[in-house]
Image 1 (cartoon, one colour):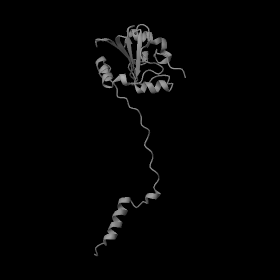
Image 2 (cartoon, rainbow, N blue to C red; image 1 turned 180 degrees about the vertical axis):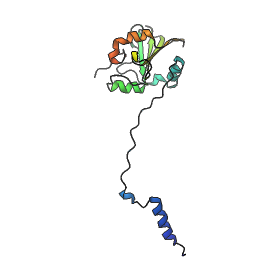
Image 3 (cartoon, rainbow, N blue to C red; image 1 turned 135 degrees about the vertical axis):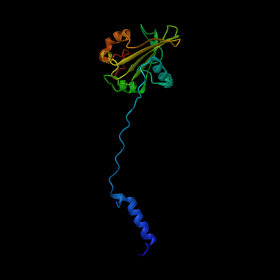
Image 4 (cartoon, rainbow, N blue to C red; image 1 turned 30 degrees about the vertical axis):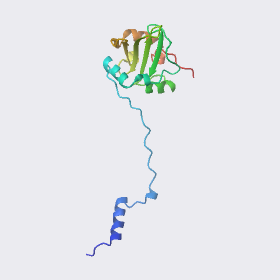
Length: 176
């Protein structure tokens, strides 16, 4: 048997590697699917939720659309409020969603009339957590770091039920 000429061997290798197809005849590659925002579930314990908020630097999140720092509040929250929302909640609110998706978090800092920090109240939307109350997990962390309330808090649910049509969100939505 006669050995292959080096040029012929190179042609065979290239043909095998390309599968014999002409690259110019190949259909264009499909674009990758759009990225889907994934939200890792946070444990529904007050300690785990607070650890998540601190780790994600919630004070760097956007403020509730249409609200600034230390806007006028009312009982049972502070006289002055600053409300932060995670990006998932922000996107839903600004896009006019009727309900916020699971993984949405709203953090409302409560301040005294002299601007002294008093507490943080949190709404965390958890799929299947509490269908009777919009699947919201509620928590209140007072200034000294202790947990005043968490979970299926009747007082929170009862008050926020007044805005059930807005997914229990009490803060006024910005005008469209």
